[in-house]
Length: 392
Ligand code: FE
Image (cartoon, rainbow, N blue to C red; front, side, top):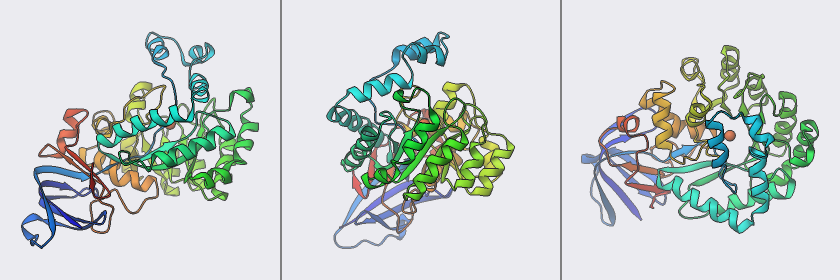
């Protein structure tokens, strides 16, 4: 079965180039051809879809999210907005501890239902691949069940493809009474089981007040040993040397980087680590990462929603792209490349993120004439999304 998407006004390839008046042929979920529409010869049995001049981009690759949790923390978010500090809120039973309690108390079915609803929102806003972390059970059985739940959810038709990240080292489990060292060693021992359950990546929250670089190394090395691809929450709250660790361990990606300095940028560059930035979180923290300096140093950029119950409810990568432009000073082209090809690079995926022959037909069509619209609309919505060539 071959489908031709015709009358594409602008085809944003994902490598920074644009084809005008383009067409794309899709066969068996893969892009078979792209080129100038007038050069596409008709053929028997070819299903033709008229996109009426639409802008077409690769489906977004959201490279950082925490989508599997129960409960909401709107009350504490309101408190924070009126001046309560994070530690006051955590002390009063809020923060990540509150989400861990709610998530542990929820049934697997409840968690799966809430997850499926969120994933539907991601897909319908143009995201076809989503990095999805565990990290709200913080005990062995729950974290492994989270991996299995994500694996099942990734098979849903109306969900992005999921890249599952084992983030049992999100914080120490409440039973550990702040013993980060002991908990990191314990988590290291869960790596093989996480891999067998279906995780592909391992992550650790390496920051002031969380895991130190030495503790993070234990988790990441064990994950690597088990065949997981390492990535990190790095240098977000304070500069702890997480970027250097990411380079040494060979992380695919170091994420957030709000406190990164020139030494850290040089380390990421040397290590070939992708910098995954999360503009909504940067906005809520009142701090921006050195996005321009990273770009100028030649560090590849990716973007993530960082959807999580504490600081960010968005599932819209269109909004993330708009903020990457207005808040980080990226060009529209740079932000869109980061949200597509950059995300694929950050996840070690070579089959998507660009619209070229041989790649997965993960495609979003937008009811606008030019990609500049992303920086204007703060939440552009696609007219149609194709996941592996199927219109959803
Ligand atoms: Fe995160």
